[in-house]
Image (cartoon, rainbow, N blue to C red; front, side, top):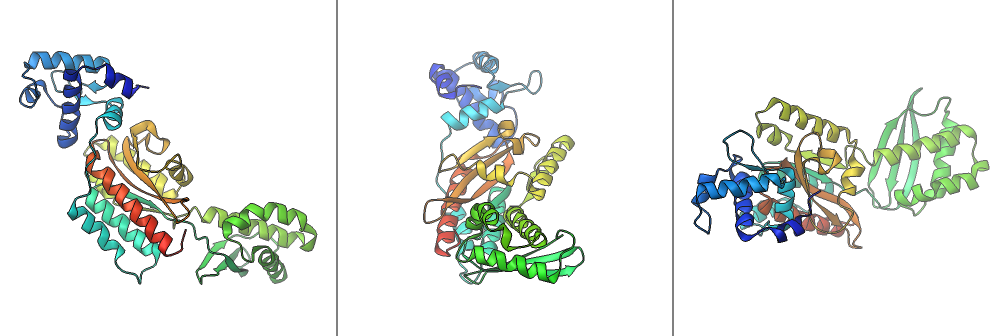
Length: 356
């Protein structure tokens, strides 16, 4: 892995400027940048031959690449990483972008998921990429839990929260369940859950059921375990990861192989296979993080870039994330402050609504 700060420090002013202008030119146009183009923009008057020599040196360092013989250069993934870490100039959110984002927070009648869905759609529209919004888990205290039989192999588990929020899931219960065992399982869970959030209940469930195992029969015990497992997994399901603007990525490339890789990425996201990995991307600290190409498992197949920022509740606990996925040729200087600004607004919204 290239040590960006050390390498930048070792490069002279001419090499740094050639490198920076190649990357900026590529990010602006998507095309390789040639030496003749740079002769018109360099601070120092240099010949095309001199610039080509510098480019060759940068290519040897693994920072630039030549897609074709006699063509210009483009940055490698390592080059983009060094540019982002050491040379990127971050702008501020423009008034136009700020207004389009703010407009999605204005309706106090809407619930948080509806607002976050609008925000995701707005982000994808503003950035011309795909947006991802990881919504917070519902963590109000539980008021009531109930199991309802739908058929021999289907049942419904219902959670009613203290703030009036209701969630339910259809699942396949362990065989042999009876109305009596379902009532027993519900009563047992209600005795454990009073005043606790779902996370609290998960943390104490294993110890509590072991300590009080004799209070319920085996059928009810199996149902309790199935219900808790269902809620634990369902909490990471489709309602938590909102993905919008997938077509923007497919429209941005005409290469069949790239399109297949992007479809693979979104298949993974739609199945929510890596949702916990997605949240882990943000948990090492505050602020925006940038993952380029294969730097992250989620995007190693698609060659995409993720710009992501966590958002926090009033207790400064990370409860979700906002991000933009795009090609590696992103306008990082514009996208980074947009993601940062949106994440801060979402954190305030969630805290104000008491959802985090």
